[in-house]
Image 1 (spheres, rainbow, N blue to C red):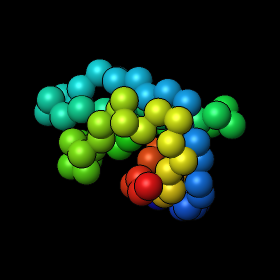
Image 2 (image 1 turned 180 degrees about the vertical axis):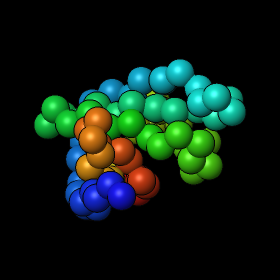
Image 3 (image 1 turned 90 degrees about the vertical axis):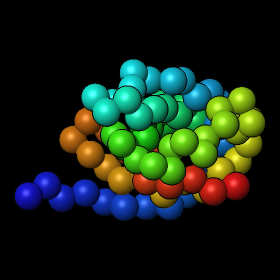
Image 4 (image 1 turned 60 degrees about the vertical axis):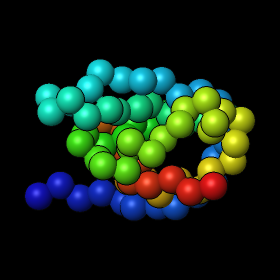
Length: 79
């Protein structure tokens, strides 16, 4: 069983990159924040369809995320 830490913080979005779709064809994004943090959205997360990347650049967003063995994973976003 893997353990992780869940956190919510405010970050300013520097860039958003489109990642390769999941095996099921669902979109995935990589967020790059001005503080250097990089986080990907989860595989097959339905809320990812509501992301409009160009609208979030330079915005301060409330990010709920968790630590994983590969880094950080975004669980949700709010403005």
